[in-house]
Length: 301
Length: 301
Image (cartoon, rainbow over all chains, first blue to last red; front, side):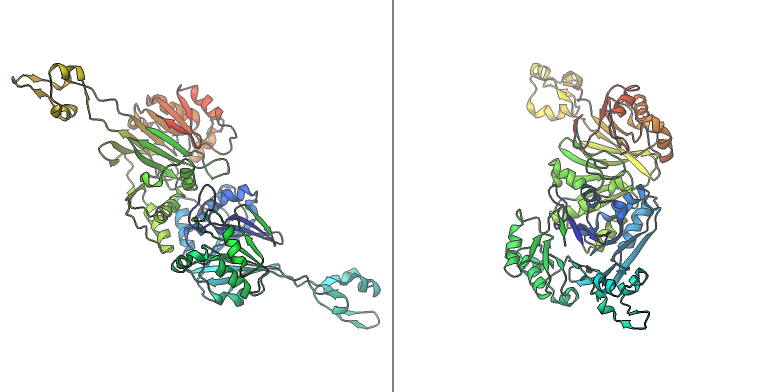
């Protein structure tokens, strides 16, 4: 699992920083999370192939999280995209995109599916054989969801020594991998546990932006491997965080600690701060394993 | 009169080039023409003060000409803009912008006026004491207007030698500048022409993008000082120009020649061309004074 940070600042695109957009790479699939203005240029800078993106998750309809979406959808069209594209986001997103496509007299050429969200409880919005994605209802000025990405791993690992000992033919390996027991020629049953090891632990990533400090999300993101939690402000501006329904670095760290996250990634910094190091320093007073998101950074999870 | 090229390529933003956007500076006023994705970052790069832009002219509703508008309007809001903002563009632009502002629960804070266009004849869309702006109806796949910007100069220049000779008091200067005759104490009338020179010639700039080759625009842009005419293709791709309703460099030069323009600025190059020099070479076979638009270039007119 790899996380490519395309942009991690709040508010407006600048020459030195970009608003929110990330690409999460899980088992060779790419998921685009938020899509601020400039996202397509950031994708090009990081040499991420546009055609590998089939699912886009939008947290909320503030410009610094989705104003690049219509441009990306149009560019996919110009690149003669063939794959289906799925967009997950708040109710209203479909109308905004379709109105603009209609105004330009354009058709995407590829199938474009909108999955509009309005539930205020966590729900599964995407699932395939490898990955599961759930919403994380957040509290912000408009309807907002974070997203929890979980690798699915139901395949057990073969115990090659035991398999050798019982002389089990390769044609039974699939059965063992999926948890089946083994019946030998003499009718003896060898339980699966004697022939396989437990699956590798699943990895998970939680994206939480934008939100006020909200402990209600903790049960949803419990034991997550990596938690991206917005930290628009430092504690010195806690009053602004409250007023604008954002979080401070310290509050993000509190959530990471309560959730027993393995690591915390901070981002969505207000552009008022010239130096982002103090975000790390502040968060580390509460939670040890802190990474600062930075535009262009790739984080191996 | 100065023209700042923020972006001059067709289709999509890339790491090395930007789609259409320009700032025209006339008599200390800034007019933004088209506003593709990335325009606000380009404005910052060229150190153009956001607060000096009060009028935005959009040619048509293809993404590479207006997907940056909603972001710029939002950024004006975050910067606590106070001035009124006027947006001129095809009918439908207001709905697109307001839908997105509503979805984000935002109000601009400043007055935002839309001047929606649907006329297919040239019309005056803006006028003040210094500048006049007319539409140039273009032919493209969707309703499109170019814009003709004309400096207004009705003020005559004082002939200081003649004024000295007749010993005319400064209190009459305003009258002379605006064309009035002078009555001396002995009732002699000195005609204005004997006391002033003709006004400096007015300067004009025509922006024509996107369009097929269309001689109908020639009377509107006759004798223009600088003509920006799109040249998406070279003649070798004339079949694509025809199919997509764009122009070639040679066609742009033909229009410049027919209109007796003083100079031709080429732009809106298809991203298929790695080198833009051939656009100049091709245009110069027809018309001599050719300038290539390039992102970041400022052209003194």
